[in-house]
Image (tube, rainbow, N blue to C red; front, side, top):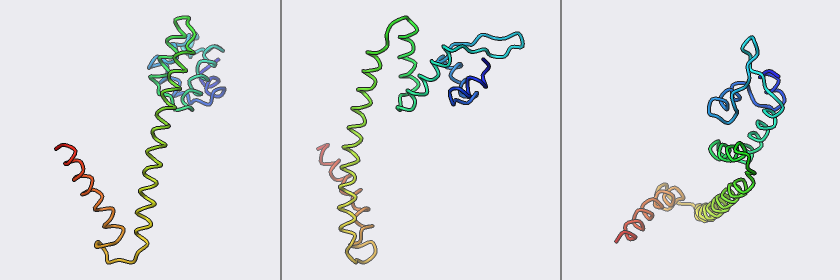
Amino acid sequence: MHIRDLARQTGVSPKTIRYYEQIGLLPPPQRAENNYRCYTQADVERLRFIVGARSLDLSLREIAAILAISDHGEAPCTEMINTLDHHITAIDRRIADLQALRGLLIGLRQQGDQNATLWEDCVCALVRDRVSIAERNAGSDRA
């Protein structure tokens, strides 16, 4: 099959397919007499794996590591599980950070409900002063 057929079957643009070849995620394809790329069903499956992994926010480097294990004839399941665990941990950390940020924003918003003079007791001053407070706290941490 030609690159446009591979693109159609996988939803990946020909430009991206060529890029994946360039960086080694896809092996160099066979070439027809007219020098057109010729792909196999194995290429379709590999590209579908790449698309699926990207949809889970795996990096190209992580995908390459998993594919390299498979290319050596080994099952990459352990690597995939380790990668998924890493992403789950990162997501949990991000969720905790976002929840903390949400709490700060809610507190600022509630304080900002008061009518105040601009840049004195208003919510803008509270936001501005957070930087000063953070700098002071950082300085006291160093002492």
